[in-house]
Length: 362
Image (tube, rainbow, N blue to C red; front, side, top):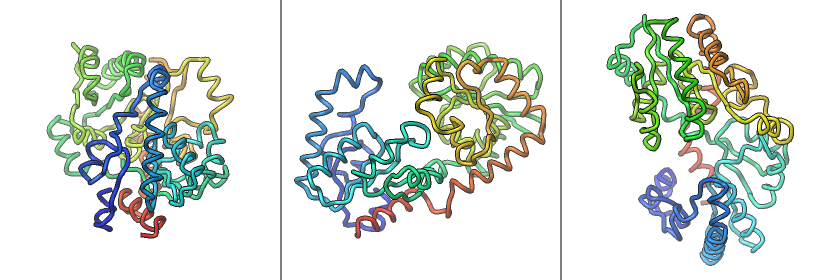
């Protein structure tokens, strides 16, 4: 929105959003919190309310006759919204910003999206080709905002100085996830790996970024251990720049680590039954992390399901710290990944704004 207003100061916005969007001038039909749900049980309990809100926003859009409709992420809600608007005969083009992961599961969604989305704005460089192959709507790669969060060399050097990291020390970053279920399953194993690695490498410093809502759980777990907690987002990205290795839960953080050129080991702990279901009936990608998928190469080692054990994670982590050549080769591959994600070098928000202006004929 900010990038759009920089190009078109007279542009007006209305719809669903939070405080940051309202500060950019969004005329709110209702706030995002009205439809924010977590977990299957929460969705079921609030279905009547969610359907009423869907009716409300559909009616508001049809009444307003906008020049363009932009559906941002939230596929369970927004895809229903787009279908309803198309069925009602809305003339405005409908844009999907952040496509669902059809390259990983439920590929049939791509073809159905072509019926109600006129165009998609993609965060990942391989998504336009995948969507085309699967019969989805036309797509434009605009980039992931994570490319703008990479710490500067100065910030990284200041972090190293603050935490006494030198050419003779090693830095390990633990990222056991941001959800309680992930942390409960992975945190004890990650701690076990860190303790074993500290015995092998006495010069190892261990860091653990934490999110505010998990602070108490994590602080209780690290009590009595020599681990530095990082609570500031800017410091977290500076830490990535200073890290020799990261041990992380599968998720967007793998993308952030890849952009920061950090060798990593990824853990994806799912139940044996769920893992088999995903692989047999849903999953299409040969990997669960975006670095490997984007490079089409198994650069990042990952442990899945029952293979997520302290011993396995320790073995993979040890290899990186004991073999500088392996770490160097990995960083070279991550340079390629970073170049792919950066595209032409334009900021993602500005690329998205330009695409929206062209698609809307503004």
